[in-house]
Image (cartoon, rainbow, N blue to C red; front, top):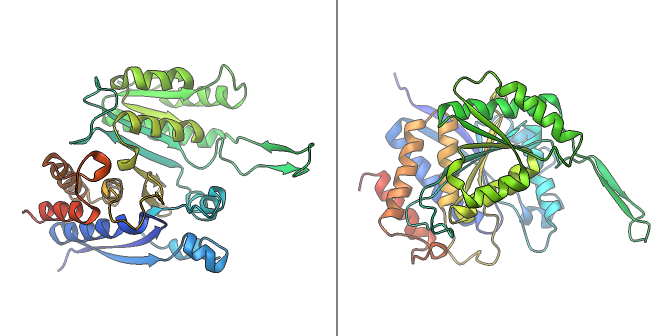
Length: 354
């Protein structure tokens, strides 16, 4: 009897370089499947800005329903210079995160071979930012009144719930317990007097009984400074939606490149599919030139495989990526000469045992 495992994965290449880095990721995942006993049914979705120009929507009206029975979503990039970012993000990315309760945004950061931190003293860094992903400062509660007049004003409400804080804090604490046992909570309770004290109280309640955990609550401004001054002091950082968004990019920059950073939008209960994407954006300045760095997409695919339970394949993919980089095969953004295709070919060669 065959023990082949089959996964249905929706692919949204999206915009710009997303369309260039998705194909290498698919090839690598398929190649690993042949070696690790799984196969993938890929459902390609032509959603994104090009879809918007035709349909005035980033995805179909029933797009969420079309994705709901899949095992995961692999996303390339979203964004177009001729469309405002709030149109592209709130038309595709954010509805998927929220409708599928992907309340964990996981952003691991390491210094990979061939990458040099702009902080020359930093040679080793391994941090995971756990960002609350569906509420907090990025709510849709609020509005604008008297548009275009001198009386115009905007109200933007941050929404923090006990449930939302508890579940992200618990996820981060459980993750820290499997790593180096150090958890840092980002706050601003000295200045934001309602939501951040609630964040502090609930997070403290969740992690109080964490055996072996070292837990610190640090004001976001001091935390940002310390990430630059002493990044090795951190292991797992848990943060609200806005703070986590900013911190994860800062940590990636300290590690040498935002362009290779991955992310996972996770529904831990697995009631809905989770979504995996690089954080580099659509990069319209280099789109179509074949020089995009696929590492962020490949790393995101590795996170996807790990989430699906294919941990051996996930590890093999990252090993192939790191071996390729260690051999000196790098794209131009990292000081190398390889184009997207050449880098992917070298990764595939290592996956195949070459």
